[in-house]
Length: 136
Image 1: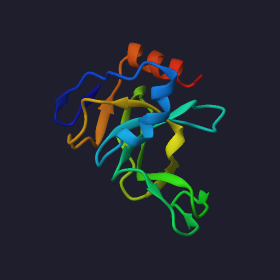
Image 2: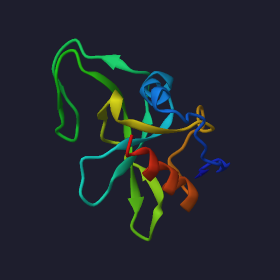
Image 3: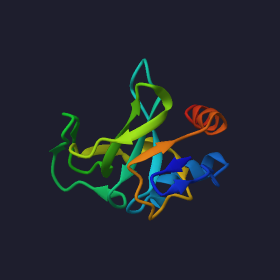
Image 4: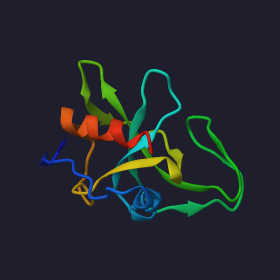
């Protein structure tokens, strides 16, 4: 994966099914993750967190209109949108805050924590790895 600050290789150090559940607990501020999407055209979205997992104390709707109920485990942050010229190049959507279900995290780009990613590129092997993680 490549960021504004240079080249970054996307790797995921979590390999077993039990650890997949723990992925949500590894998210911190500025963690870039792939989250399972409920979308026929895109099986996953890339997302940059603005903090760790939270449990909502009251119902909340994000800037995309998704409603989350009190007691839901969520992660706040911003989606990346793919650039129309290349489906493996992404740019962050800065003006819309998103909430995602914490259990939807399927892949962590472990080497991007603390990197100020606004644009990124993933390679085919990383894309394939993410697709493989969606089945869990």
